[in-house]
Length: 309
Image 1 (cartoon, rainbow, N blue to C red):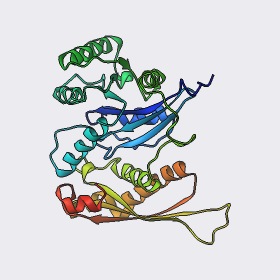
Image 2 (cartoon, helix red, strand yellow):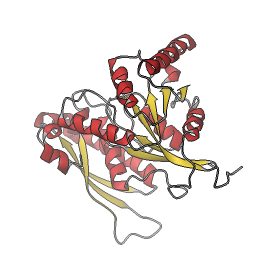
Image 3 (cartoon, one colour):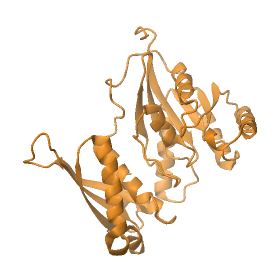
Image 4 (cartoon, one colour):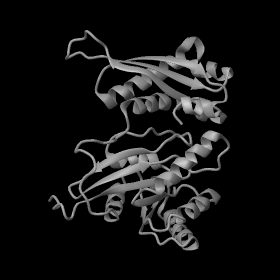
């Protein structure tokens, strides 16, 4: 049954957590489709991405943020700033604490920082529930409760969840919606994100490049889109989207890793990215991908600006 306008709720909730705490996977599970890239590499998310969950009784806007961490570069500092700016502006903060890991210094730091946003209600999510048994989960939930007490946080709810197998994803949505203010929808029905298509496309290319590269590379990869447009002169029922993109690395020595023997690795990246982009946009794609070097871009303010940070 649809809610009356007086009962309808709408607002923003942000997922925060250490790098690789399952924030992006959970965002995609709640929205019902992939809008945020996910990777086994930590710190994959580089800006706040909004995903929109439409329900009969509410519109929940989820903000997936980069992992809060001890920054080693100017990029790292900027990513932490994104997190803190975001949680100062949302209606609910959902702290992701993976059940597969013990509560560590990074989690304590995160919860201490979240506690400073005193008036915003907070939910604790024991993510990656599929990776642990009942005894370990009970222990983890107990640790989360104690962590809240230590930092003066009264959790509005503590929810075990697995985005991978869908366990309690709907419960997470219910708990977040309860804490939203009453109000009309903020986005048109059917919208799943307000990210520009070019940003989403760039992220899918970066995700394809991240998979299978050596550990030294993940943070060294950035993507820019030079041009994205439908090819002229094609029949309406056979459109083709031309995308010209650049993959930036920090050092010449990294080029060989990404390009691979006789360009095989780059072709594989292009093919994987193209499949994902076509699934997202529903249009056949021609992808032209070039590898470029922006020396030490993570620590260079000028390069960071050029690459959109």
